[in-house]
Image (cartoon, rainbow over all chains, first blue to last red; front, side, top):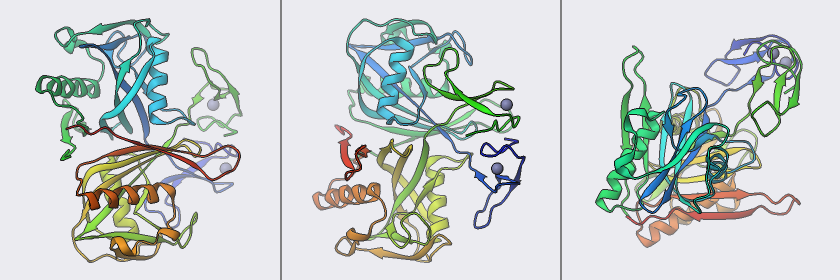
Length: 195
Length: 195
Ligand SMILES: [Zn+2]
Ligand SMILES: [Zn+2]
């Protein structure tokens, strides 16, 4: 951010009064421009023992497989966003269920929320952002060509739960990328589910 | 948003190619400026049978009581944000536990996430944004002067759970404000916890 989105004057980095971190502050009108993490919402669309994945037609990770997910928009709820992304990327209608995984990615300022979902019919097809959309049994999951670590962790938890017959779990975790450029170090915290 | 934060030129509302909703797009450099919901993180600090509340020294809802919570910042996780807000507003140290409630407020583009937390000591005091900080037993909760609907709903669920001896629950809900200016219509969805 170099210019004020309210008046067009240059902004500078300063710590506003009563605050404790640097913000972009307008030199002319004084507006403080806050920047905050973004929420990514998506789901695990289930049909019998299979789940729906999309192969990405866009960057980043063009050509790799992912669960339908994308940035939450203004004016919608997290569940509405997850359903909208599934419709856009896979032309698929789902009933969104419980929150399944929540991942923090502080190095890119994203919070991922993935819900369980029931695919309502088999009339799906690639949306504009997908090359291909299909159902996968556990044995068919393309683990080596998944697009994102959040998706890999979520599917790993999901199929482990299914093998154990565990239902109703919810996981939250942090994906912390090491500053030295190594492989990301992943810390998965399991939500204590004592019901 | 009236001006491009990258180059200072005016922006217009247009639907970018491949998109399906209006965005602020720069007339000069072409940058698309996305606007997304913000995450509010906070916690329910527990000490024996009491919880910690803060009385707000700032607008909105000056003088009313709330759980420690505030906007998630860049570079932190949701749990780190919840602990930071508790330190800032109540000078209190907590160990953040499981996610307890998640509320969507689409009319103001916020997603609230409140965690259970263990207060680590009794050395708390009002931060700059608080007039007063104290522990409340259930019978002392100031229901009539709570600052936000999200806090009221969360505390209501929390004490109901405690009375029933229910642990490990997690709730997600939407607080939908009616367009006609009536009282907000609240829809609370209970996360199906079948573990
Ligand atoms: Zn300005
Ligand atoms: Zn521009």
